[in-house]
Structure formats: C-alpha cells, structure tokens
Image (cartoon, rainbow over all chains, first blue to last red; front, top):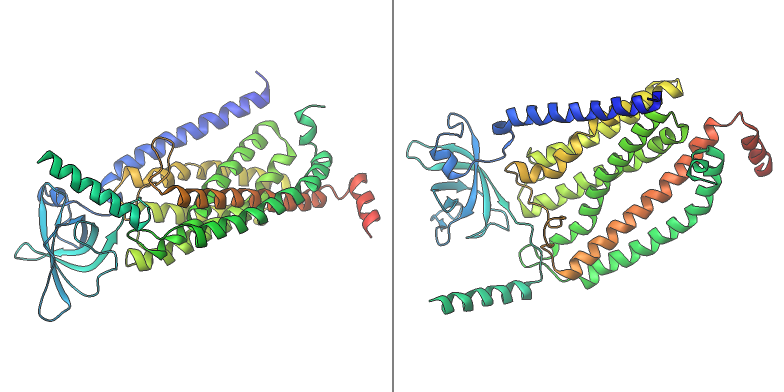
Length: 148
Length: 244
C-alpha cells in the first residue's frame, strides 16, 4: 500500500470513528436535546416538572379564551392524544392560531395548569399562496361531506 | 494533458483567471433574476404573508454554509492524504465565504424568528448547531492565522475542518432527530417539495446564484494565495514585472 493511500485510509477511518463517537454521545444526550415536551411525555413524567421547561403541540380548536383584563389568555395544548391547559399573560406571536403549532415555556402550577412565561408559534414547512391554501381547504371539506 | 495538470498552481492560476468573469457575471445575472422572482413574482404565503420572503436569502445562505464546509473538508482530506498544495489553498480560499454565509443564515433567521415565532433566538438543536458551525469557521480561520509555518498551518486547519465535519449532518438532520422550534425541511431528496412551484424556483435560482458567487470569490482568493506562496518562483516574478 502506498503511503498516501495509507494516509487516506487513516483519514477515512478517523472520520468514521469520530462519527460513531458523536452518534453515541448525541444518543446519550437525547433527552437534553429536545426543545420541548409533548403533553403525553409530560403525563408520562419525562419532563423535568421541578423547573421551567417547554411544552409543544397544537393549540386545540375552540380552546382559546381571553380573560377580562385583555392580556391573560387560556388555551389547551394538545398532541391529539393528551392535552394540557395553559395560561399565559402577554402578547402572542402573530402566527398563534387555533389548530396551529405552539411552544410554551413555563412551569406546572399547583392546579395542574401550565403557567407559561413565553409563548412561541411553531409553523410548518409548507409554503403556498393563500388561494392554494383556500382551495385545499375547500377540497378537504368536500371530501369530508362525501365521506359522511 | 490530464486532470493532474490542474493541481499545479501555475496552470490553475491561469485557468482561474479565465473562469472568474464567467462565474461573476452568471452570479450577478442569477441574483437579479432570483431577487425579481422572489420579491415581485412569487405570491404571498398563506400563513406567513410577506415575512416568508426572507426564505429566499435565508435558505440559500444556510445551504451554502453547510456545503462550503463539506467542500473544505474534502480539500482538507485530499491535501492531507496526497500532499497536494493546491488543495489546502482551496480550503483557505473557501473559508471566509462559508463563514459569511453562516452569519447571513443566522442573522436572517433571527429576523425571521422574531415576527413569526416570537423570539430572535432560541437554543433549539438546529439554531445551536448552526451557531457551532460559525464558531468552527472562525476557529479554523484563526488557527490558520495563528500558525506562521504555512505547511503546518495547512495541516492543522485541515484536521480541525475534518473533525468539525461531524457537525454538518447534525445541523441537517437536527429538525428530524429532535423536537425543534425550527420547522422541518421543505425540500429534500426523499419527498416532493412542500412549496408552491414559483416560490421553489425563486429559491433555487437564488441558491445557484450563491453557488456561482462562491466559486467566483473563492477563485479570486485562491489566485491571491497562489501568488503569495509562489512569490519566489520565476513565473510569478514574470507576472509581477509585466504588471508593474
């Protein structure tokens, strides 16, 4: 084997080894790398409930209620299996909508409600003109009535 | 004549000189077309309205930041294995552009995050690993600058580049592997793009423009590096005499 081939082999092996090591480390830190927990995970006790953490999911349709002071908002975060009541006082991001993704940071209160100190909107990776979105929605509705 | 001819700095210096205008003008043309498509032809988005247009800068910059790093790692590996001088010069020529694209990706991401998510910055896996990429670029450039001996510097930089290459798949797949605030990929090899066609075309034109820009500036930079390193050789002296 020529020396340069040997060197190349060493480099390839080195990078492969490094990759495996990185994969193992990341796997070990799996739970620390998640940005938020789903309500199901919280229920299963996977979230660090003794300190502030983030929950994520969809804002349940019809659940958003604004209190009389105009700032406090109550809504339900759901992952379609489990759901969680959230209360937040402050300004919501523009993309915050019922049925859309949301990530809230805070702690669970004594009554089991999640007291959020920050609410972030999580949007998906779909981009299309409003007309297309409207057409999709119509098509979906038509399909639903057909099924019924 | 075979491919190895171009590994000689003299040949490559002249070849690069001929290529630079082509890549420069293509980059300018594509940028103009791409920006026109992005800001005047592409429709508004159904949920993010006009704010989504940051994507036309953000995504090409983010792609380039990762791709340039992989190219640097490739040249570093070739240089270490085959001792080719030009490979190291290519790696050095690419690094500043990679760092700039990483910075642009992070910066435009913050501008996008504030109106859409409600935060300039969050420590999720995607954003954090991209920030690490910026530190890697800066670290590699600093390492090269810190070692006076060119050969040793080249090798040290190449080694650091190769070690850091682990970060690239982490950035790319972070949105798949972990819960992140950053959304998943709109475009991937495994599924149809989840973007309206005209938006997609605008973004791809901008991405190709970024490619050509990168090639043009990297060639300009590598010519400078070649002249500096070969300044003792006859052919460089001839050029200098002709130009002064």
